[in-house]
Length: 314
Length: 149
Image 1 (tube, rainbow over the protein chains, first blue to last red):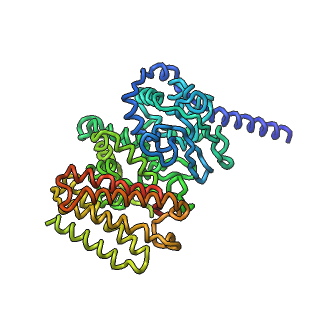
Image 2 (cartoon, rainbow over the protein chains, first blue to last red):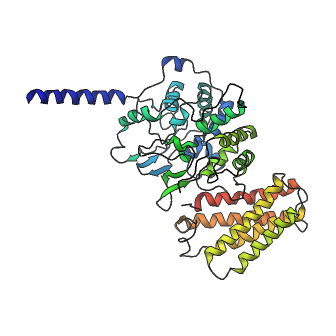
Image 3 (cartoon, rainbow over the protein chains, first blue to last red):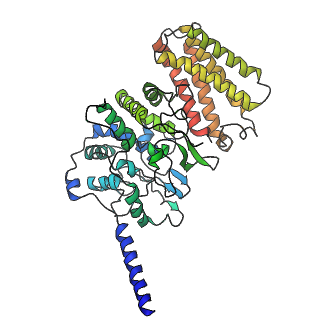
């Protein structure tokens, strides 16, 4: 009996130790950090609009130049509790002015803060993880040119067990992946060209479209089997219900009747092919996309016509 | 021919809206939205180069948008924010913001009508300059005050 108890204690300690090790924040390797190039702020501006930073990090409803003041404070009510977007302006103490490029890259690509804690995936690093080192460096250079704000944002307000950050280390083993979602045949035999690859990068990585347009499973991970098929989104709307997100796959219950050109035009103008307008949080996203080149918007259209059509579940 | 059909549709849905004016506010709103959408479609079709620019059509689109802008605000009375509607409860909760948004739609539409004049905007560039700011009001309002569930 005593022996059995001792074995159980040992197993419990080993198990807890294993969980502790498995949940540790994993930073980029020293080689990956050393390989980060010098950033270029001009190129970084394109990365900034494509990545939609301002949609969460500027003051809610910001228009025009106010979109460049990344003071944070937007509240995202979700079933896990309320997330608050932090200040990412170049303010030395309230923002990220004191960060190194390595800090920034670890945050964007590994979801790890300079203090060595996990970020919550309300910050879409599961998408940004595949951002090129060049784009990370360029974006960081651009962010440094923006105005600083001394706004201090309160921490997230989450319920147990989601308030235990360390647990995200386990979550990352499941949902922080390096592979693209849509496999594209790049052998040159299939008609896949640079623009398709650019479209995939814009949608899956920078634009992080899947973060809202792909339904989430019970663990809050993207259900990639239903990639871009919409449904109940992660946020709660003004009726107190889960925000309903459109299906943007080429299925008839999605946007199957939109051409690639229609998709590009909608991102430029904010109008659907039937001249309804975008609404809700998509307005801010569209206004970011309107700043991209026409070629980039066309690339997004091409990609969205190439993903698997999936029927809406409602 | 296609243009004639579009113009007829715009006129018909606008008339439809007026016919219902005395009754159900949600129904009126929907008719106004359809008129607005049809006018935006006419405007967008010309701006996108899907049909040739025509000053009468440009004038019609602007006039329809302006009529809708002036009418819209009157059809959100108390009790009409629930039921078969995508209007957000924020319209009542944030009356100040809502009134400002409506006032901007009206001001932009009035300016476009003034620029449009008696004969409609002379060319496509003039039309774009006049109607562009009006069309931006669609998403500005839908961003904050529409909810789809």
